[in-house]
Length: 261
Image 1: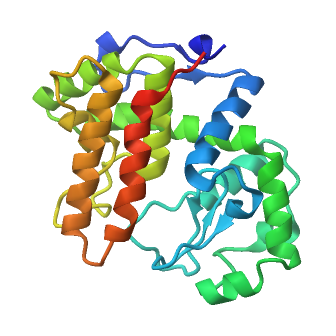
Image 2 (image 1 turned 180 degrees about the vertical axis):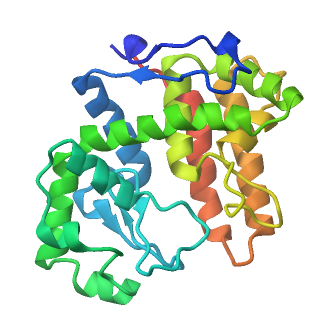
Image 3 (image 1 turned 90 degrees about the vertical axis):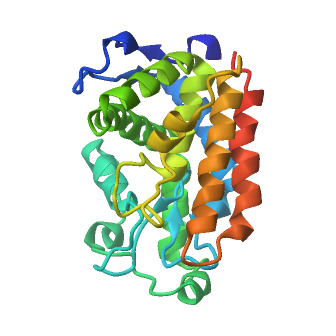
């Protein structure tokens, strides 16, 4: 089943035509199965992990993709996705709790407050909603990748475009597309100037550019490049991020073991 999981409705060889569309189609059942894989990576497929506030972070991470929602109007450097997810759900006709519709920022001002209210109605309602809308969350992630690829190409020099195009072609398999989806959700596109430490990014663009060409397995090549970019991020970070590196490495190297039917 997973061998037909993804249908690419574009020709990668058409790049570097900057605005070339990039589309991925999934059936509802396939979207649900893909969502379980992403949810496993982000939250071990546990309902309670659909609403999380990690130690050392200034925001909660919500949904199967751990989408960021800042608790203030002053946003941090990382791309905020949860408000866009809620807007997307609303447009799809999902009935939302009124408090969620009215909230302009995350209503919890600290990690301590978040977990003090963990079992109260708002967060309980939110976990229920998110657990019932896995397929829409996957579609939201797919849309992010579909939008990201042309922007990544457009932001690159001609020599970089050739490298990125070659590596996208190598990843044009069900396993490769899942890898792209998971990583862009996990660490972003790599084109936001704010999402950099000491001027160096760690997103999908940087990984595609860093993939070693001599490996026959493109998933292993992607994992090695991602490991390099994430290790560089930790070294450049203005705060201690080393505690996350082991888990990040395990995640990106697990891509080479994918065998989707």
